[in-house]
Image 1 (cartoon, rainbow, N blue to C red):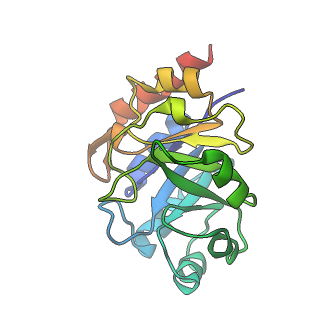
Image 2: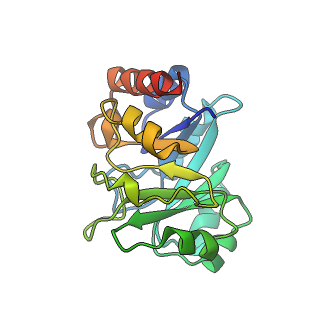
Length: 207
């Protein structure tokens, strides 16, 4: 199975185009004010305008209200939502768009139960747990904590780089990988060479 790639935390048109031209399947736009990668509605509109067909635009939200999400959706075309906070399944289902749920993985996280609790999710995004942030920490977690019997597609995130993504794919065999900080010059500013290297590493792991 081909491992898909999402490049998250896009804040600039040129970075979106670099990601698409490198072969990314999806880009992520962060609508969370506390994140250094947060975009305004105006920024998001300009980025979405250059995204070609067959590349998904993901909107990332953290504990946002229904009204807040609907305000964004009234102005910005999003294909799927990523809930990256403490949302329940009911919270996620309030918006009539496909979604997936981020789980911050610790040693005692029951991922089998998470798949049951979020049975309407299209996938589970598995990220490193942090007490200080909801994501984007650049930290990995123990990939052996992911059970092979998980019933939901896995989007693997958390500290992925060109150097470790091949090993991650071989071990976890995820549906997709999600990278942000691992392809950046600085927070919110992507590095074209790092994106190219990351995509090469993913491609190499497929062979």
